[in-house]
Image (cartoon, rainbow, N blue to C red; front, side, top):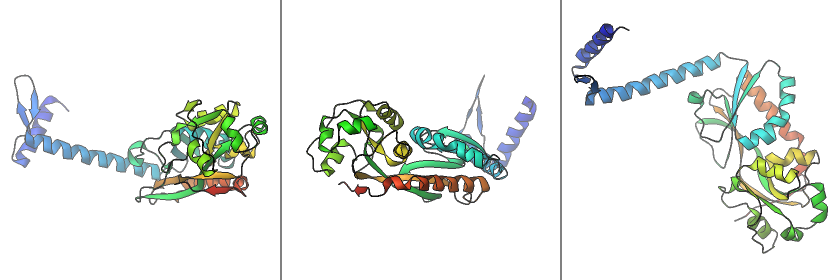
Length: 279
C-alpha cells in the first residue's frame, strides 16, 4: 500500500473505534493505550488464522508426514528401521525433526510427535507404546568378564544422564539397590544423550543402563546382550501423539500401524524378564 492509502486506512480505523491508535511525533509514531490493546489482540487473531490455514492445508496433503521425536529415539529406533517403512509406503514422504522441545502442532507444522513421559496432554490423541524399563547391557565380550550383578561393582560403568529427570530415579544406584547390592557408583563417563551412551557401550567402553526402546534392536541382533533377568521400570513410556481428529489420516495411520508392528517384532526380547519397581 502507498503511504497515503495506509494513512487513510488508519484514519478510518480510528473513526470506527472512536479513539486514536497512534500518537504522532515529529519523526515517528507510537501506539496509544488503545493501539497497544488492539495490536495485541489482532496479532493473536492473525496467528490463529494462519495456524488454522496451515492445518487445513496439511489435511489436503496425503503424501507428506512430518514427525518429531527426540534425538536418541530418532537415532536408535526410527533411523535403523526406516528403510522398511519406505519400502512398504513409497507414496509417503517422511520428514523428521529431532527435537525434545514442547511441540505446537499448528505452529511447527508437525503431524506426529513421539514423546516420552508418564502423562500426556489430554487434548491430544495418544497411543502409549511399549512399557519402558532400564537394564544393564553390554557387548558379549564384556558379559563374559562380568557374569553376575555383583561383578558389575568392578565393571566400567557408563552413565546416561538424559533420564535423570525420571522419578523415582532409575539410575545405577537404584538398579544395584533393587538387586540387594549396597553400591552407589558415581565414577565413569557421563553422557547427556542416551544414544551417545549406548554408542559407547557398543564400542566396548563399559556397561550402560539401556532403555528398552533404545537398545532392543541391538539386543535382538546380538550387538549388545542383556545378561541378567532383572530390569527396573522407569515410570514413563514413549507415546505416539497427534492432534485429535487426525489419527486416521492415511499417512498417520500407516505410520502408527508400522510402529506397532515393529515393536511386536522384538517383543520376545523381554520374555522372562523380571520388571522391578523402585521407590
